[in-house]
Image 1 (cartoon, helix red, strand yellow):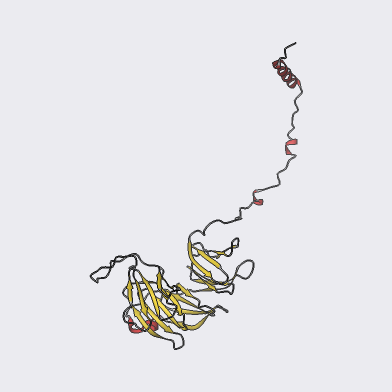
Image 2: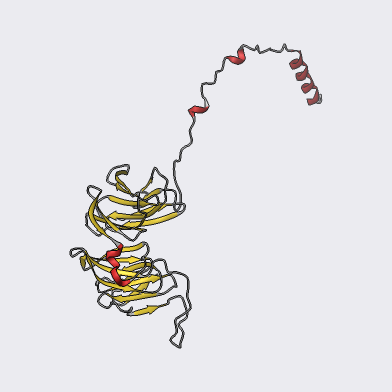
Length: 308
């Protein structure tokens, strides 16, 4: 049987291919395919966002509709509902969101920005949008409070004053709580910025106002005067009411918590240093890091607890 030689077959194929005439492609045929897509036809866009918002600066929660709002340093606003429900909004100024307040179960949200502007968002439509805006030009905003089912928004400023805004019209009312009227003779110095405002849980006509210097004022909205004043020698960072409205708690810059009875304006009922050692000789404990936020909670057994 004759042996098959694969090398000769391959050499024969090479000779045939080399002898075939080559087809020259003319320059005109190269221009038959025309590019119609240009750089301006393309644009980058975000299709999805993952994880916690970058640089969060404020949070708020609507306990009825179960919506969580998170504001960021870049002016972004993220809304989270049930699993799979999420929305992204952006303030045009790009200023940091310093505080958020829900109009509970009304599909609306108030945002306060670092550029001293306040905005009312409508969340009832498919794409949330700003309904009203208000800009402060002479005073810097430091704190906002919107009582439950109230049409009045309380805005505290760096000068220590409190302005009241009608949420429906988003116009300033003529009612202003001036810092000198609030503290009167309790201090000769300026009390500093307003760091807290909240209404008594048992009496919406009473406001507690916390000033940075350590002064707290219980203000009567109807009589337009202070009922009581409370003074402590450490700066205040946060204030919270007990649910019965008879006591409140303050967190301070030295790491202490002070508990006050609203009718006892002399000294605090109790002073606690939760993160520091308590000296046995009765001396003042060594200062710790500031407690920036405190909450006054009561368990089902009626036991009071402070969360900081």
